[in-house]
Each structure stands twice: as C-alpha cells, then as structure tokens.
Image 1 (cartoon, rainbow, N blue to C red):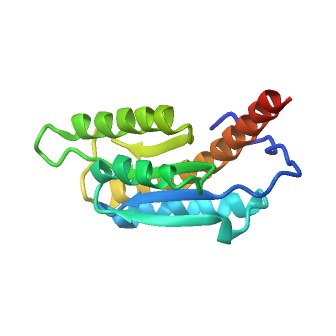
Image 2 (image 1 turned 90 degrees about the horizontal axis):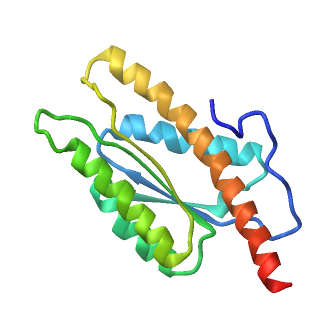
Length: 166
C-alpha cells in the first residue's frame, strides 16, 4: 500500500498537468496493466485522458533516452516509466533495471522534470499462468500508485515554484 492511497491529492487552480507515460513493450500484456491502472487513477483524480500522452519503447533499456527527449520538449509536468525486466537465464536483468532507474534519476536531475519509475524487476519470474496472473494484478496496483505519486510531486513542485516566484 502506498502512502497516498487513502488521501486525496490536493486540488489547485493551476492548469491540469500534462504527463507522459512511457511503456516498454517486452511483456506488454503485463506492462499494459500499469498504464491501465495509471490512467484509471488519473481519471479518478480528475485528470482528463487528453492530458496523458502514451509512448512505447521497445524495452526498458530504451526508456531513459526517450524520457530525456520528452523532458527536453518542455511539454510535460512529469514523466512516468513502466517496464518489466526479468531474469531470462542470462544474469543481466539487475544491470538493466539498475541502469534504467539510475538514468531516470540522472535525467530528472538534469532536466528538472520529475521522472517516476514503475520499472520492476522481480526476483523470480517464469512465464507460467501463476506468475503472469500475479504480476498482471501487481502492475495494475503499481500504475495506481504511480498516478498518485505523480500528482503529488507535481503539486509539490508547483508549491516550490510559487515560493520562488514570491
């Protein structure tokens, strides 16, 4: 359970946020659930679908560069990334997942645009019905959590901007 689950995100008179959602296409049937949960929660929080732009990346490793290019447009208040990095029998999944998260962190520090990660790497994943079902449900929840965290950081950044403007 995330810390924002039972609290409403503060509403403001500021323009509705514009958010980019990047989704890796490896294990798309699972990763798509993150986007669905994200979109549903955004709508529940009052953000209209036209304020969300969805971009596909071939894999999680491709997300940081796309996120940087999107941040550089100045169009987005935040960028959310979703992917599933699994151990496919070659020990590199930890490297890929760590690299993606570190690159998103560096990109947000460089551009000033918040980057939220729902790029997950499970300890154990096998393409069987039980694991697919579990992670499909898990990604739906992670999408909802990412939406609430995204709106919270946008709200906080807007508060900070008001302080610097004063």
